[in-house]
Length: 300
Image (cartoon, rainbow, N blue to C red):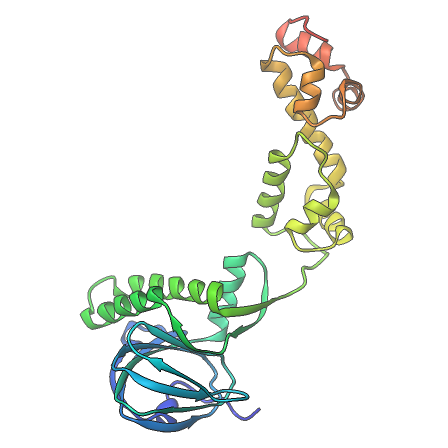
């Protein structure tokens, strides 16, 4: 692979009339530029940024080759073309057009992917699409242009919000994301811990498997068990049993229902299983706990 060109070098290979530049908002990792082009036949070296082209004005037949065969389609307002980074490309069109270029830095896309999918992203590629009809990107483009042209107070904040919205939309719809394998050492990320705890609470009434919990964090059961013990100080099975006992305690304090029903509500196999585990954790039977807390004699 040859040297990657920068945003500033692109006009050398794709000369056109520059009509607007977002450099005034001071954001280099998501930059917007508007160009007016006449009919052209160009070759563009690989770029260090992802390129998204949003067509603003004019209609033309567009031919493009990135790898393999040429692709051809009719483009105009409302159409988006996507080009992944680090790929050379050939372009040929016959009519005047006005386009917006989004130049998106790989570091921004990686960071956004990690936050959006709650997993550490390692590599991102945009799909090779010559024509995608995307009203969302057209709308975002129009809003960004308006903010840049107005130069009003708070413009940077609005631009940042739109850049984030565009990045997430592109990642969801047009990108292939390769994620890093989760590390088996250390604690869970806070978001993963919340997901694990929520899943256990929502499924406390049934038998939860280690495989289910491991899938939440996209790791193997062995990796998950090691990480869980570091984070919570106990094995997953012990944690789930403790939460089942705590749920049983809540029912015993407030519900005047039979113990066999509470056993099922709290996720135990039967009343005998509830009695055995409850005594182990609380040093009393469920019936004794209920009498101590409520003075009730319902124990069947």
